[in-house]
Image 1 (cartoon, one colour):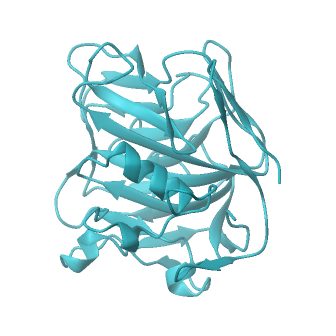
Image 2: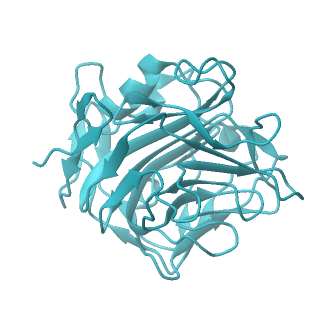
Length: 279
């Protein structure tokens, strides 16, 4: 096992080296993720109900190459989830934006970008890390301002505004479509694996964010079964292969949208299922 270090003046860590073995415990088996080649791989979906405001995004990521969020320094570009028009997304290490969350009002050139409040966040190569971003009306780490706070491996690492002209806004999943593994305009390709990704349109507590990362409050960094966290009820929840046997070209939506009759199943485009999973 290798441990990553998140350098924010805090002793944060807990990244996991990649493994090809699935984990079964507490009724929760995780045997598959989806692999992206940072070239032309993605999974695509559309919001089948209406444009949905994104309060939170949770995802496990295992980049092929180290991604270092050192602000003002050009980094590799890896988009986990791109939604709305081309500039919305949960993006790790973009050279042009140096932000983790980038939000653009549809139909305008006004872009809001959020990042940890200080220091450096490192996503090591071939190491599973959990990232969560969530809209807060009054941030604990950015002088009470609204915006997207950021958690890595279950711990809040802050919120600062890289670029926020005017009033900050929440992102939206659009009926026009969204992608996992790239931005909506086919750029900022992700290289590596993504697993257990979910979208929330309600607030998730710090304790539940830690539980998503830890599986149980006393766990050590394996994905938590979101079904055990009800009434958390993520709007979308894609197991990235486990609900589909790791075969075929579709990823089934297991979130509240599906039980409400408006699922957003994903379609794989070049991306492939992998047996690399957090454990």
